Image 1 (cartoon, rainbow, N blue to C red):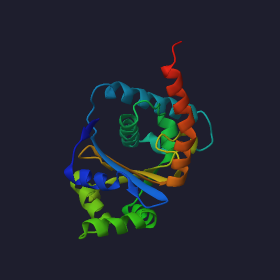
Image 2: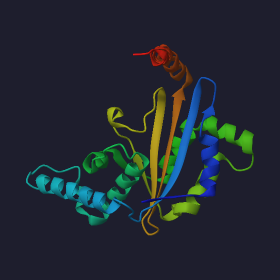
Image 3: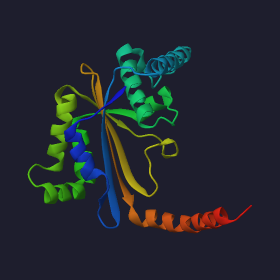
Image 4: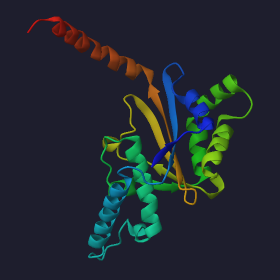
Length: 224
C-alpha cells in the first residue's frame, strides 16, 4: 500500500483538520492509498489470508451457519485484506485481526453514506459554504472522491469497531464514523474518518493533566 497525494483531498483536509464550533469541534481526514504491495505488505497479506482460511476451516466443522460465509469468495477475502492493510498503514502500531475486522466492516451505498453525512455534518457544511461559497461540502467531497476512485464503480464500506478496540476513537468523542471507498479495478482505496469532539471534555482533560506535568518539571530540575 502506498499513500497517494491528491490536491482535492488536501483542500478538504485543511478545512476539516479542526473545525471549532464553540462547545464542539469537528475533525475529518481523507487519505488515499494504492493497493499495490510495498514493503511488508505481501507478508502481512499472506498472514491475513491464512488467518481467514484457518477460520473457515474451523467453521466448516460445525453445522451452524457462519457469519463469515461471504469469505468463501476469494475476491471478498482480497477486498478485506486491502481494507485491513489500509488500517495497518493508518495505524502501524495497532494489531488488526482480519476476522475481527470482518465483523466490523459493513457494505454501504452512497445514499446511506449521504444520509449519515447530511445528518452529522450539517454544521460543518454550513461553515464550508460560508467560508468557501460555491459548491456544498458534500458536492465538493463527491467530486474529490470521484477523481480518485470513480464513485460510480466504487464499493463503500463503513468500519464500526467496539469502542475498546477502536484506534480511531479520540478522547471526548461525541460521535465518529469511518468509511472506506474501494475501487477494485483501479486498486485504490480512500479512507474518510470524521468525528465530533466535546471541547469541554478535552479542556477538562488538559487541566487535569497540568499538575502532573508541572510535578514532572519540578523533578526534572532536581538533582537525584
